[in-house]
Image (cartoon, rainbow, N blue to C red; front, side, top):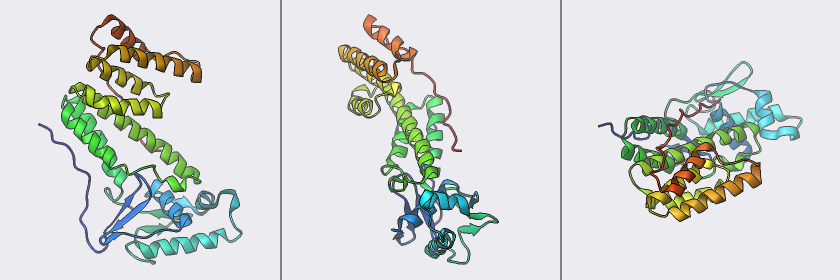
Length: 277
């Protein structure tokens, strides 16, 4: 039987470093977390990580760090920030991870140097397990991947448009992982265990129809059909008031099944996760 993946790790040593973007920006070295408190330098590093192994021009970095408020000597300040960041990372000021390109800078990371790599790898392995019918293993793996998420993604750096776009993409990836975990949990009969989580998710994401669908399935599986019908009424009212729309076909079919007391329709297969730009 297939086994769950474990998060990617790489050999450690004096020059070992890993980056965390599944929450506040974090740099971890062989002796622990490395200090990086200046917001502009944190923004610089985060933008380079978002575009890892791609050149980011000086003009782009200036826009991401200062926006419309760039000082007259922004380019000189940027060079200072790069120098300070290089001193902190392996290789020092005259080489290492941050490289100079013809038009700007880029950071070179190996696969596994960023926590996002483990997250994406684990989600894809979980999908494969679920497709093969190993729902319990997939459920555990999806939950393990969600445990890697340490909080709001790069929350203190949202003035950068590039970071905001990355955050939007990563938040969607995390929500899809959550939906996949719940689908697997429902497939192995953990209906009662999931009700509280799903009630919270429908409040937090009131326009995300999949969470209403999953909550209805969990309630029906826990023999709480009247509550499932109330969830549908809430979803229908919310979607109509906010968007002027009726619930999707999957929710309507589940509602009809609940009204008749039928077995709910089977869980839908999901499409592969979108790749980052």
